[in-house]
Length: 104
Image 1: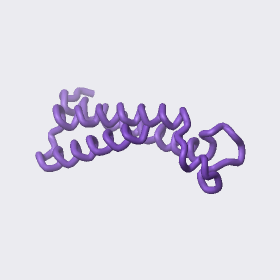
Image 2 (image 1 turned 90 degrees about the vertical axis):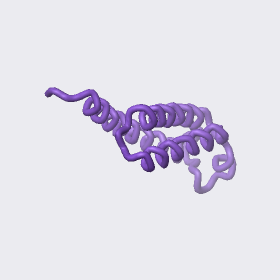
Image 3 (image 1 turned 60 degrees about the vertical axis):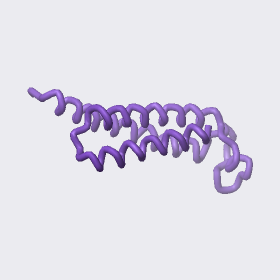
Image 4 (image 1 turned 90 degrees about the horizontal axis):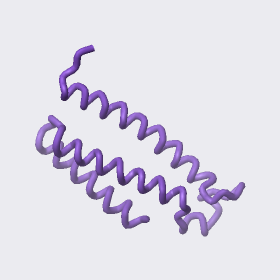
C-alpha cells in the first residue's frame, strides 16, 4: 500500500485516537468504580471519593494532557483542515489542557 505523507499521518492519527479512546474509556470506568482500591466504594455513595483525586486518576490525567498536546501539535502543523476548524480544534485542546492541569 503506497500512501502519501499526509495519508500516513492521517492513518496514524486515526489509529492513535482509537487506541486513546479505548484506554481512556477503560481508565474512566475503572476510576469510577475502583480508583481508591477499596471494594464497594463508588462515586455515587462516597463523599470522600467525589472530592479526592487518587494517584491513578492523576496518572491518567497526565497521560490525557500529553495526548491533547500531541493533538494540538498535529492540528497546528500537519492538519489540512480549513483554518476555522483548525483554530476551533486548537482552542478545544488548549482549554482542555489548562482545565485538566488545574484539576491535578
